[in-house]
Length: 106
Image 1: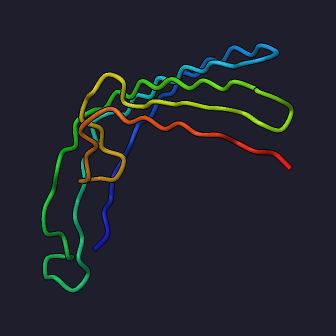
Image 2 (image 1 turned 90 degrees about the horizontal axis):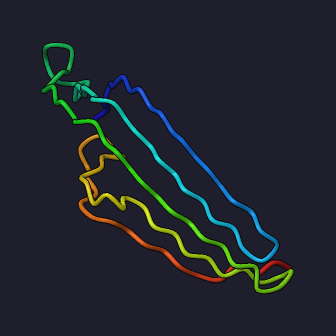
């Protein structure tokens, strides 16, 4: 199965760098999308259905703290508006997501 779509995407990113930390803000906007599901062996050119995927707004924030030259502690969040976001045609993300960890450089 494959999908055909046309997408308009906008992204605004800002980042503040300090000697010991950095903070980033991300705002992504995707327009309405129209998907045609295609299965090549079906009649009628394989098109089995059309679907409208609504616009999506994604607000993200990330923070890095440079503990040393080799160790960075980070935290990031996405979908902070807690909206339904479609990264892959018909598979929505329903809530905010968070990730935290440690980066080691050798």
